[in-house]
Image (tube, rainbow, N blue to C red; front, top):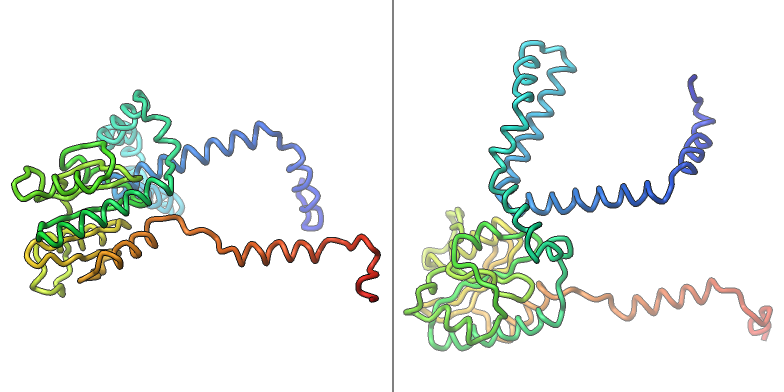
Length: 295
């Protein structure tokens, strides 16, 4: 039995009334798990594989819609072995997820929280270390991870889990230290890895006076949303790469302000809150029956 357009709102209302609390909880859990899976895929090289899989499924649907029997038959046979192929292709990612589920960091995997106090201390220690390394002309490459996870980059170096301090950063980038040539990756105020290899920038228009450290920093900012701090070994100049753009010759004060603006959560201004509460006060009825307006 068909439903007319006039009856459609009533049908929708009756359907919504049948939804229970358990249904909403079921939907919320599925959305949350799907979001975390997408975040995990985004943090690895599996993102390109997922895009290819979506293109394959779209091609399969189009071949069925336009009755391309030959292509549809071949692709359908490929789907039959698709589960096994996915397990083989995503074997490193599946193994990593199972390892995280069996470790104490499983809760941290589902609650990716960041405290402002920790990041504030991290920024202060980083600026202090960069200032001293700039004076001594010690090369440094420090990556601040943001939304896009850099697990693959961390595994290319030495995996650590240490609080950020100026002494630690200076020791890592000391000229004779074994990890001074790579990058330090920081997540949520902690050093995750040192001596990490970063992708070089493919921009052919970069200045020729930029060395490999600067090109690696720019390349990292091109391939992610990370904030990369670079200290030149030749000149001691401090630079920051964000979104493929390089800001050079920064003073420690400028570096600190820039890192705070990029890494610390932005709070709502008090003026907006005052406007909101003033609007609520205007909407509330007056208790004295409007005598104040008459006066």
